Image (cartoon, rainbow, N blue to C red; front, side, top):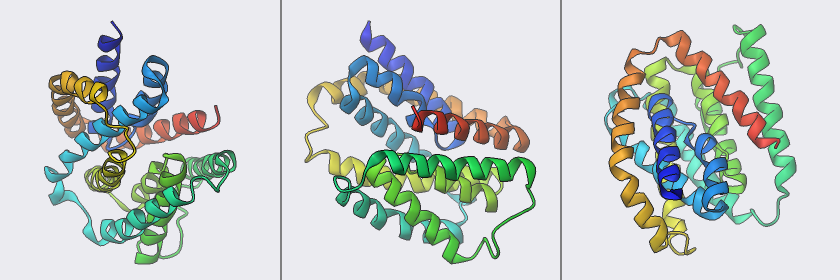
Length: 236
C-alpha cells in the first residue's frame, strides 16, 4: 500500500513539474519523507526531477540561451561550493533569507509590477541569480526560487518553462551523480523508481500537454502560488 501512495505522489509531482518546469520537490518531498523517510524521499524526488528535465530537449527551441548560459555558469559551480560549505552554514538563517527574498518579489509583482532592476537582462544579473541559486541549492536543496524569480522577469511563458527545465536538469544531474558515492541510490530506491516509471512517463506527457493549453496569465499566477507554497514549506 505504501508503494501505491509513493507512486501516486510521484506522479502528481511530475505532472506539476512537467507543466510549470519546477515544483516537484515542493509537492513530493514533505509527503514522501513521511512515508519512506527523509533521505529516500529526497532521493526519489531528485530522480523524478531529473527525469522531468528530459523535456528540456523537447523545448530547447524556446530556450533563451543568452540568459540561460550565464545562469548555468553561475549555478553549477556555486552548487558544488554550497555542498562543500553545507556543514559550516546554519540552515535556518538561509531559509529565512530565501523566504524574505521570495516575499519581497511577490509584493513587488503584485503592487509594483512595472518596477525592475536596472538593466535586468544584462549578463551580470543572470550570472548572479545562478550563483545565488546554486549556493542555496547546495546548502538547503531549495535553489529553484531565485531562478524562477529571475526568469519570470525576462521570459515569456514558453521561454520560462524551457529555461527552468534546462537549468534544473543540469543541477539535478550534478546532484544525482554525487548521490551515488553517498550511498543514496540503493536497491530499494531504484526498484521503486522502476515500478513508478510507466506512471511517471504518462504524467510527463500529460503535464507537457497541459502546459501548451494554459494561458500566459494563468501560468504566471500559478507560479506565484507555487512560490507562496515554497515560503510556507521553508518556514515550517
